[in-house]
Amino acid sequence: MHHVVFIVYPGFELLDVSGPASVFNGANRALRQRGQPAAYKVALASAEGGGVESNAGVTLETRPIGALHPAEAQTVLVVGAEREPLLQAMANPVLRAALPGLTAQAERFGAVCSGGFVLAALGLFDGHRIATHWEACKPFAAAFPKVTVDPDALYVVEGRLWTSAGVTTGIDMALAMVARDIGAAIAGEVAGRLVLYARRPGSQSQFSPILRAQVRADSPFADLIGWMQAHLDAALDVPSLAARAGMTERTFHRKFVAATGETPARFVETARLDAARLLLSRGLSLKSVAAQVGLFPPARLAEAFERRFGIAPRLFRDMHADL
Image (cartoon, rainbow, N blue to C red; front, side):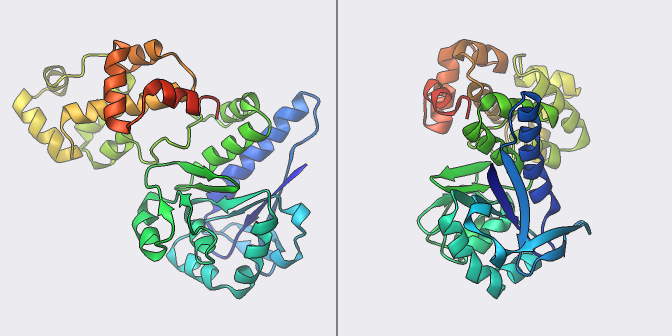
């Protein structure tokens, strides 16, 4: 039985706990269905113990952090929050006194989302590369210059240290833990039961080009972008896209750049390469990936992939498949 403890405090982000906890519970369920014992026991701890109210108004029961035995905290994860609750947690004397010893004895430790600020304030991230919420990357780097912040990764693993980016990426990180502890098959089953679109590798961008464009784009382009995502293997040149949008090529190019901040060609390549990373992480062949994302033949995919990411797609696949 592996004990996972989430460190919470008043105003914590509820999804930072409920998402990963559901993954560990899902792994237990999958194991029981196979006639095997549960692998995880999840607990919550706080400075004083007792009920702690989340940002959503939901109160969760916790144990005092000082009462935890190392055997009850094999994985220690500090969850995130908005600025004010986070600052209070960083200054909390009980947490500051207990966390260094607790994390030192844990098999692995880290943070979900902005919870990394609490550990970084104790010097526990110095000399390491970490992930955090995309909005917090610049403030984090400025506040803790001895820490390398990866603004793109969904989660980062460095030895015993695990950190995830914004909110739902805690689910991705928990799935990676399950895959490492028990196997990719169980992790995949849990992801399917949670109705996740896919198990995302840590190197996947936390803010996809599709989402970024949909947030910024006017509604006509939001519909077009959704269609593009579903048809990456189609002809996505300016004439074809302009015709679908009902505009002249010149007008389409100008309005698309104004709405998304990227030229159509750059956006299409980014969307295709983002999808390619996801497919490669599943272990698919370069030929299959190239065909699915519209970068066929494989040599075309390899050229674009290496130019953008500085690594050959075949090597990327070997490094990330089944993680």
